[in-house]
Length: 125
Image 1 (cartoon, rainbow, N blue to C red):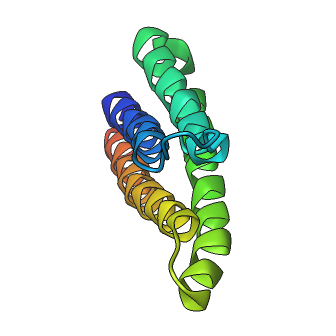
Image 2: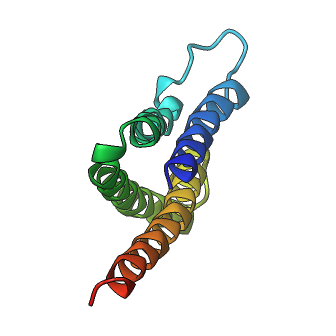
C-alpha cells in the first residue's frame, strides 16, 4: 500500500503542475490556486515514503493517508459537483478529478485493510 500511496500522491502533484502549465496565459499573472492538488499530493507521497521506510509506523501512516484521501474526496465532491452542475470550468473539473483519484485510492486502501485484517485473524485461534 505504501507504493500505491506514493503513486497517488504523484498523480496529484502531476495534476496540479499540469493544470498550472496548461492554464498559463502569455502576459497574464500565473494562477497559483491550480497548484492546490499538489498539496495533498506532496503529503500523500511523504506518507507513502515514510510508511515504506519505517515499518513500525506503517499502519498509522497508512491510516493517516486514508484520512487525507477521505478529506480530498469530500472536498473535491463539495467543490466539483456544484461546479459541474453550474457549468463545467477548469476548477470544477480539477476538483472532480481529485475526488475520483482519491476515491479510487480510498477504495483500494479499504480493500487492503480488510485483506490485512482477514490475514491476521486467520492465523489466530
